[in-house]
Image 1: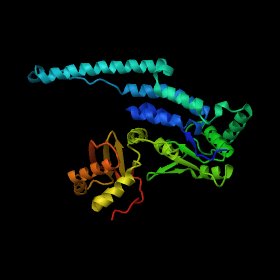
Image 2: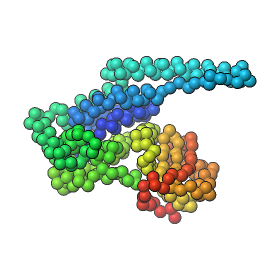
Image 3: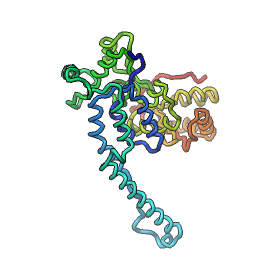
Image 4: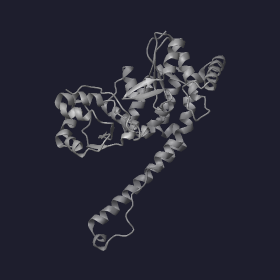
Length: 356
């Protein structure tokens, strides 16, 4: 029996691939295909993907709107070459948006032919290591009965505002597979049902951690991560810097700006900054949130000390960031900005590196 790490990917991770902006997102999904033979799958995940796919696509389509020119244009601007060029450019944008909307329509009408995310997900389902949908009737009844019991007793994982047993079915199937194969399991999820995200560390729910040890083996463990890139690396799959950046863009979108967030590479940045500029590193350690996406980084602090921000907001600091990102094989930063966040929105954190 296999001893290799098994993988479970929550539905929302698959749906997030509809939010990618470039080819890197799709290539990351193809990496998931390459490890489908290690993937634990349930018909619950498949159903939720198919149930919500159209909604996610429609949401993306709703955000695509053409720019507009003001109805009133001052006479001293109306005849200018700039105004005429602007109007031509907007017409071109409108034509491109019509093309995009036509493509959306084809994706919705015939996903098996026109939707690369749908096609890739279908192959992952078909080639997954152990799919609950293909379990025997006896196994399905046993798992369903266990899931019903844990749902009725309020055991995690479950959402407090729903009567769905989906998370319970997924977890019972994870336990069953891990015990059968005597394997560790890595769970990729971002919605909080399986545990806590704090200080850029990810902790499986205490009850789930204990239950896994009890029902699978004291020598085996389940782990939690929000990053499919991190999971793939654990499975010895090479992930490019571009793919990691694209996933970070998705994470920023899915978690939102109201969540205190530190990107996975932030400890590396601090370590290298400590070597180059210890005082700057000490100041950066006070950050309450770091957001990274589209080659831009926004570093926020739990106060509005203008002099403090001015000491950081310099060309010298920006040059150091560019140097560090080059060393990490990341794309050059288009923007490095600093600001403040309300103290009551800050999640306290311990220092993660010494700067001196």
